[in-house]
Image 1 (cartoon, rainbow, N blue to C red):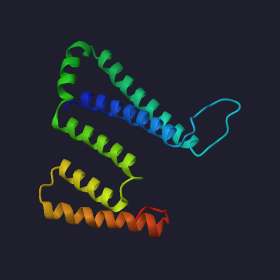
Image 2: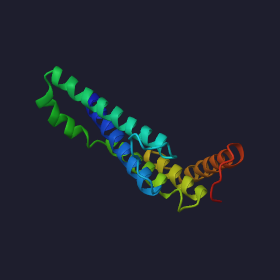
Image 3: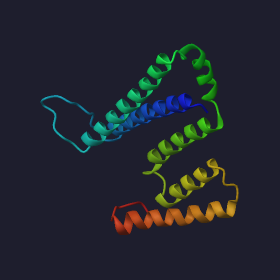
Length: 161
């Protein structure tokens, strides 16, 4: 994958994640984000600012890549190559990871934390090329148990059992 294709993919991923986060934050909490004189800080204010900041960062990154392509005079010729490179194996893995992260974040309230984390880790290992089922299951189970211990016992966060 060329450097420019990777940068376009990363910029688009940042923008997509920020839009998904913004929509998720404002639809699940029941309070919409507003920024005016009468508005007050709520539990969604900081996450909304993070989502907006991530989207702006992705847009600036994407526009910077397009500006460099234009400055180098490779807009026309590179565009076809860029589109062709976006469908490589690395791009598919990147898109799959973004989808996996969004699914994990949206399912965390409905699915048991340990089961969801085990599945997330196992699928991640498969995406990155691990093919030994015993090792995948063992490492994913240990990882899920460690994360559960970290969140429940060290950080004392209330998680579903």
